[in-house]
Length: 250
Ligand SMILES: C[S@@+](CC[C@H](N)C(=O)[O-])C[C@H]1O[C@@H](n2cnc3c(N)ncnc32)[C@H](O)[C@@H]1O
Image (cartoon, rainbow, N blue to C red; front, side, top):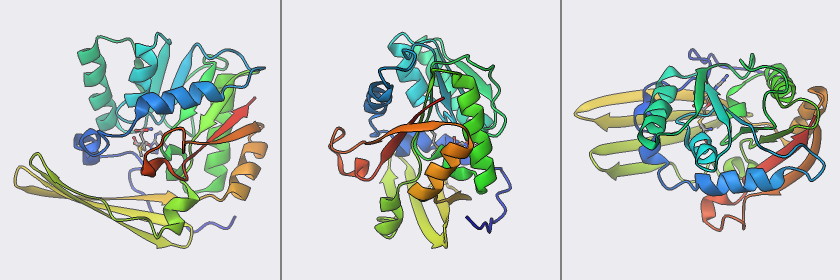
């Protein structure tokens, strides 16, 4: 696992992208992501009552867990994403503990969650394998003995399909274009949008980790991979193809 990282000045934290993130992801079935995460908890693990959503972004999964009655917390490196999550929490009158935090130094006590989830490639913003190992170790520490960690890494299909179609949206006053380019095992996500007459551009970098890399990193972090659960066809929509939930216990 040789590394050649570009500089990611925000450390992976989303900036102004937070302002439009939910508009772009409005059709993503977070309730089903939550179903599949809960279904993945092995029968011999602690029942998933208390949940930590790591790199929670705008909080869609955390809010879904809260709606189902789980004590839930979420953290993200981006204040802007957390502000959107907090507004949704207020609107839903839900209890979700939101804090700013980094995957590499998770701000929660050991054993404080039964289930820890990192959905939608949050882990791939860590561009060095050692950072991923540290993060998985931290998530395992929070889940504690008998707890479960569910991770959805960037899928190979995303790369194999030539980074699928670039994403575009032209609706509700937002004109958005995303372009992806691959540089070895790094993916540059170049975002450009126009809103209220102003143009914004942002670039984020992710690193693709192969199944072999991931297996090695889970093992180095002291986690036992128990299952790799494909989202498709449980989620029948095409974007779910190739997306996998890695289920590990401590
Ligand atoms: C693709 S979004 C996914 C958000 C959310 N998990 C979801 O499913 O909608 C990636 C998120 O990872 C966050 N992030 C990137 N690097 C991070 C880090 N080192 N620690 C915590 N969060 C991070 C970003 O700010 C962003 O909110």
